[in-house]
Length: 361
Image 1: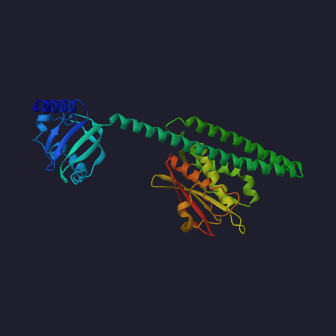
Image 2 (image 1 turned 45 degrees about the vertical axis):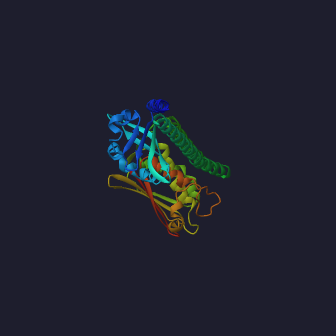
Image 3 (image 1 turned 90 degrees about the vertical axis):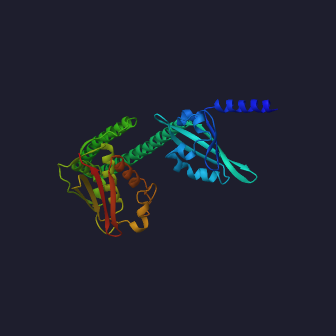
């Protein structure tokens, strides 16, 4: 009988030593009463160095304080399952999944059994899956951004072309028709440049960094003003470009064009009917950054009511039937993608000031 028991005990120890997971028994005084050979690989401790000789506090060292809440709950009779990154004896770390099983005898916790498995490969796979998920999310975000740039930028050209063609058909003199043709040629040229910029964005989608180049802010404002010339004229708007002709910054051309077009378009769209729109653009240098300031005398925005939603997708505030709630959302995204940020100050019935901060060239 004793021989059978001894044989089974030896077999149990052999099985325990044959697995790569750590197996141990710690009594209620936190002294090791059993350990398998895996502790040598994980902690550099042999079974002889551990059993009846070492406390879990000594074994874990700095890890003890992290594991202490789980140990205390195990000694209260609660099963514990948790992940832990364990530093290896010589170098590197290993991700583990730990299980603490209370040993309850006659209603009293005598100690707890520990099973700690190596989940390093699973953790690496999990991180790779998470990375893939982030990549897909970023690609979807870029796709949404690109589709909105195309929609917004090309819509500006479409509206202008429609208005100019209407004016062309209504023109009474050859001189007026020639003027409209001149506008069409100018818009056509700008449209080609915009398509080229959008093409550059497509090419850069698989790159880690967005394509950027030196941009003259004054020139881009003038380009946008020319693009919106018909809307500006039909709304009796005045666009004042106070930006110095020598201020440049590093930015993506399509993004920069989209940002300026959107601010100007919004200032015209959300004008007060009783006054002609006046849109002023200035540029200053603040703390090594370039601040582009766009000020209008439009309807203004109730920031106390809408401030948190101002740059949200599909958020509209003025009840315009053609408002889609895309422009400011995508503009903020483009600004932040280029390392900038945007602030707003607005008063209902007075107007709005947007300040866009960019890194200097």
